[in-house]
Picture 1: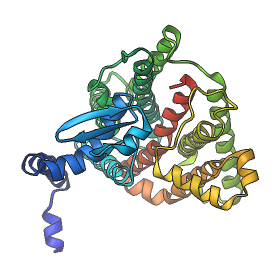
Picture 2: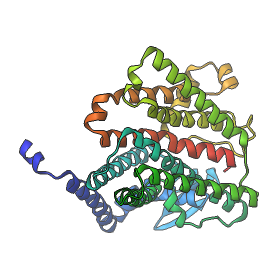
Picture 3: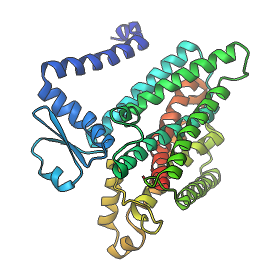
Picture 4: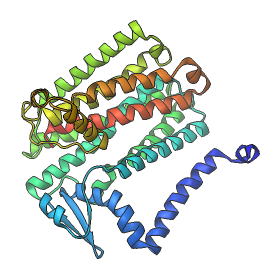
Length: 378
């Protein structure tokens, strides 16, 4: 058995897995359309994207036809296959596996290009995570414009490219192009380190996405601007990160030995997600938000339900039921950083960087989207 595993090329195995999944989905949809496409692919993946892209409460597929409803009662009474925007347990697990698959692809690309990746490369990857969250918010703004005027900023199905799970592929392809060009610039002697042009490319893309949101907020009534949400979220996340750093340095310094100050990015990213969720879900009236947001992730819903069941109703009315999300996110990030000791970073620096990227992405990515949605009222 050991000899068999020794003969398997991981890169080829990854390519076979990707090709196998694509082939299975294609053949299954052709041979068993009702069981595979309707009840699986459409219900859990394409249906939610279509509903989101069309600004509907749900999309209903029946006898091959799709109908979009803007009323929750119509969705509840629909007789076909109902798909709502957001995430289910199945789609959440699937997207997590997709993220792992994409990260494995990045790892093989880094190995093939023989890229010298250190833990400090996370600084260059940081703006790319911000870009992913901002790009997803552009689609939210497009839907808001569709609801207000009947004309979206980006028509469906083109918006599918910036809705989960397809946005992962979009950002992945752009990052592959950028990192390949950046490595070429380094080896051609045009730059000292590939991280600089790569990070700059991510920063430019993030600013373009953010600029699009600002443009829509200035030129349309469908997109607003609430500076208070942005300031409180960033300030709160920064204070929480500083507190976490101070406490770990004082009482548990082993946490920061491996990653050093780079770990601050990870904690800050998850703190952004925590504060953005609390403000959006429990303090929307106090901040004058345009919408009453609902949790789209099963973890958020679970924390809300658990807090509501344990916490006295009077306390819930006063401070809400999502506040535990902040300490949960911060503590989880700190615990993950504790795993990245000197040994791991020295023996497998490329692998460690990609794992840190994954940890950062699952916090800062949705956190960026949440805070920008609330800030621009979409």
